[in-house]
Image 1 (spheres, helix red, strand yellow):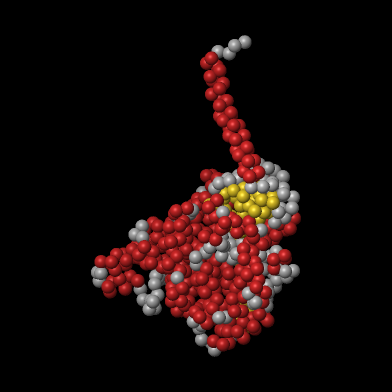
Image 2 (cartoon, helix red, strand yellow):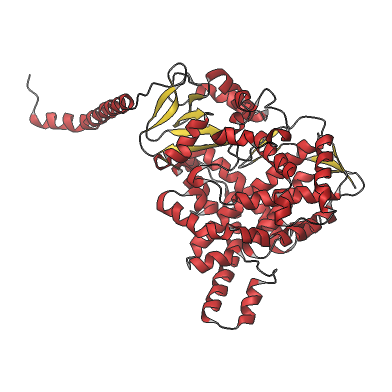
Length: 519
């Protein structure tokens, strides 16, 4: 029986998408096989999922771990069970998880050009626009070049006076009678005040706002900013399901945050234009506000390099997000552990005694080695960004993870997410010793550990995307620690339990940092 030509054409038309799909799959499989042979790759044999399509079989245990605030502890358990590199699937994403320093070095440095942050762009866009935190390629390079000069050493040094002013604000709200106080709550207020002062030249001064009252627009901004950050995490988790989900409160908070910062962008651009034309220097000073000699305003520095207001706004939002939460989380985690360690607090008291109670200058701050060790140990035990990931934008290779022993190269197809878990890597006994789960700052004293670890310790990322604000963050955290040690003879823990995780965009203590301060 001969089919009519018209019917044959209809059948071929109907089948052509299937044929094209099959041919594409065959071609991709052959290409992947050739690529793997070329680099000596072997398959990653360990997988967390038995469901190869959506990974739904692991969803119940994941939800239980999140509800029990044990998702990071569970990660450590999974690496102990499946090895240092294994695969999993989360809905539409195939993910390779690793705690191998050489793999992380390859992702962030050696093969930096093979990975991107495309998966991060959309979840962050409503709040951040497109700045250094969620862009790739030429746009990212331009953002970094735009921001880097504002984090120069002299800018950090000049800002110590502003940090001291805020410390005095902190003293006024902390109880002096030994009553229990949650330091973590006040550290978040301190760092939002610090970050807005550094970026805009005008702090929102949440520390000066009485509880239950509002103080101009700044407090509303701080509250909106906190909610907007939580919404970013929800959008990132939902992925394509965001098409069916709408958070009207998040939309309102995003607008409020960007409108608040836009006012300072307009002021910065206006100030720069007035300087260029040489018009009315008095007005320029009024726009810039009173500030210590040598102090520059971050937003004005950006406006001097670009007149694109939306670009300035996006970069300011990114730096504000990256700087405020991370430093507050670091301080909260650090003081939680110090409150459990009276001997360490006493040693800090002895070290800062050389300052005789006065605020340290930048050089003195850098010379306090045990202060530095305490901050390093806090960042090791509780990295403020405990897990990060990159998306392969082309077929590439990891040096370790393939084969039954995990020691062969592993093929990474384009579109795969590669996640590196710093929380688990920083607790590897083979890297840090049998006491890797303990808070022990003295492990850093001789300097040999960090030289030996290199890519095994990454509190600020590494490679071309290493945090450009790490000097400022470490200086601020060190300054707060030194001034607290000078002000209070003792620190008593008022939380009988161990530290528990609270995951947002950064890692902090679920129960806060409840302590009693001894004058």
